[in-house]
Image (cartoon, rainbow, N blue to C red; front, side, top):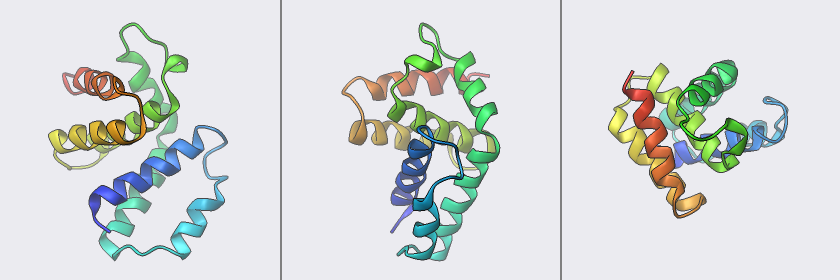
Length: 130
């Protein structure tokens, strides 16, 4: 399993947490016990997921302040989860910003609507302008 799959996994945990309190997820604990990842990607999943949980409200505030004609409540949950993951990586890791945005858009194309990738790309572009 590579980094793309690791980002996909983090996204799925964050998406799940949008529907119930973070850290109440049994699937995360099961994943940690029964995964097929190499140690580097497992560390990526752990670090990013726990970081997102730690900065949950801050990440949502960053996203909210960069929405033009939307409120955070109007964003599809899939898109919000993707934004949360990407904003965390942009703000708290040294990963290449263009790569993060590209992979966020790819997640949109895989899991969301036809127009979602353009929306997510626009929000992330607004965030990195600062």
